[in-house]
Length: 173
Image 1 (cartoon, rainbow, N blue to C red):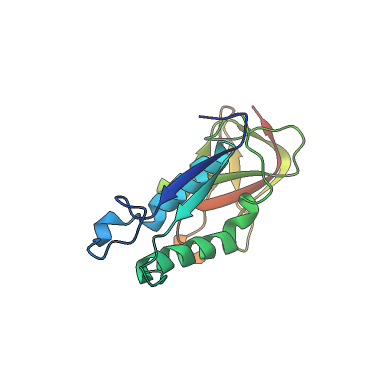
Image 2: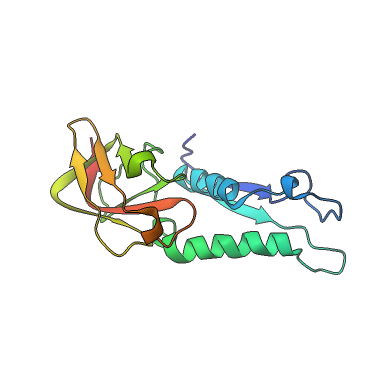
């Protein structure tokens, strides 16, 4: 739900504990996909995410937590422009703001048939659409009721999880 004031999703990578557990199983640890899902949803609703890792009693971060933090860093290295200094739109599954240079959309999964459907975005004829982690522009089609964005072959994209696109020349339908 869109919040008009800033808020924070304080959560922990371990699904069962805010502290270190020696007996934690991999199934107790959030996957990078689950973390990105929480993160993207928080940002799209005017929030941020505080991600807790429980260190050992010696202050050491367990390798699985380090892996998740590094994965988040890798994702942000590629897609950070779609997160940092951005503002939410009124529709979180698409977006809207009148004084923007670019609109960003993040798909949490690779689009089926390599085509992403956006219902609330209208693109100008000269609009450009790019995918972070891919070197070329994406083609798109306006069906009159939605925008269909064509994704490249998966192996040509350097991002491994959650795929961010940038649209220049976008407005709300």
